[in-house]
Length: 347
Image (cartoon, rainbow, N blue to C red; front, side, top):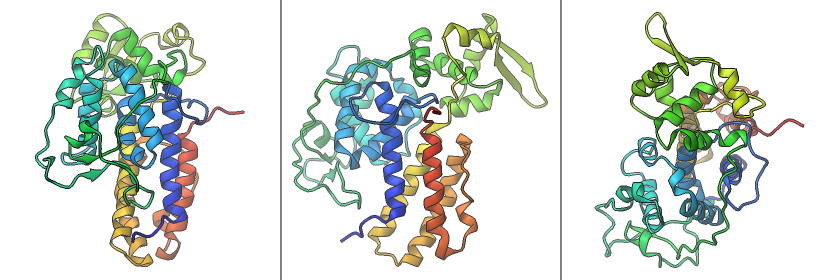
């Protein structure tokens, strides 16, 4: 039997649950959560993280599906696919099964390609992977595999029945700025580029590509320059871009401040990879020393993604601590990281 989660693992899983619940609640999902964050929410990055962490929180998962059934046309499906995990990751199957439900709704043509994607190992005679799990990685007991959409993707899931209680996002709050930009520019890369530029004094093309998830956004930038909302300046080795009259945009959108847009895709990727590494080590029945050493190696790789968000974590670098104190230090680090990532309003 897999060992129950430790305080460190609980901190990691509960922190992820809290962050994604906060962001979904701000966008209109019917769940109890913290107050809306003061940072821009990235719905595509949020979806990929939710397809992993939602497996440990069935209620949250169902409410996210409920939200998609109503607001699917606000998602940039092309960008969703570009930000996706590596090929073979089970989240592709989950996303495809969810898309199969979405395409039954009006205005969902963009989801059809994802919904109709086939997976070689999803045959009817093969054992299916359970959708919902306990915190220790074991399948959630008492769950019947009777949802046809998930079964076709090789996943055992109960019948997914949504309640229709999700609402449309409140586009006037700062954290919904990206969705607000899509209402203005359309669901395309122009909305992402504009949102990224608004939150920065200037940015290089490579920085914009990394944040928006597109291989190139030069055409969008060229059009922004042509119509006079963006300036282009030559730096030593590359061109730099910034919004003209940036302060006027803030006033037009009634923003009290310029909301930051952290690279949520990288942050979530690093934290999900760390969580999975913990589960794998527990399943292998590793000793505490081997577990700590394995988590340290996983954290070194995960941190490469996490630091791209430039969160101001006050805890010391866990990797500087000896093995016997590493897990304790990492727990403190994750606690501070999640407190920072929640972006709770001051006061």
